[in-house]
Length: 176
Image 1 (cartoon, rainbow, N blue to C red):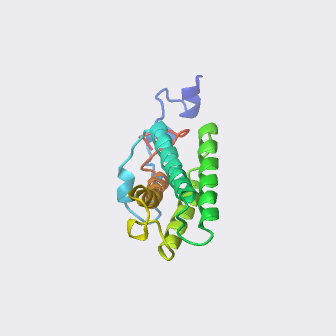
Image 2 (cartoon, rainbow, N blue to C red):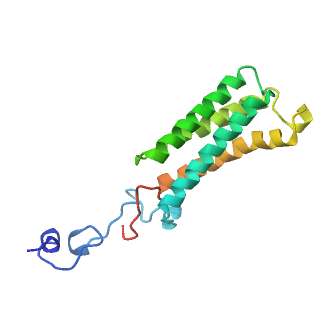
Image 3 (cartoon, rainbow, N blue to C red):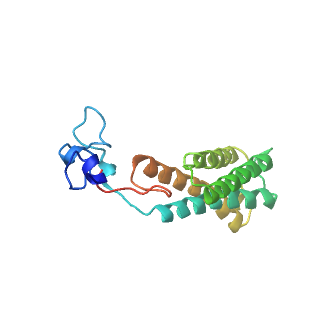
């Protein structure tokens, strides 16, 4: 008896759905009590390596923007230099770990994005690097890009957790 016969109860047809003889419906993404899955669950993008690279670029962008603002000398509030360098350190750790491990670290990137968002909104109540505050256009754009990259990461992480995007090392079968 081969492996296919053992797993499917004697049938030689492969079971691609994950239930005995593929006769039962599988609802992995439907909440109990609901008839259908979430609307966004019907959109699936199975590009795991590209998604991993995109996440790493977004976090690296957040870290680079925080580092540029910290090094500029136009700090948005007292103690902002320490907070910005902490964001940079978190971003470097996240990018290094995600580049060299096969673990699911994508929820930890939220720490980097949240820290950058908190620093940004803390700067709004201080003296942020905007053009009308005496900063250059490039520094103001870098400051704003830090927020937009953080918001972009929140959207990416939401899509990953909902199952719309797949991140390496996982691959998403389209028969679940």
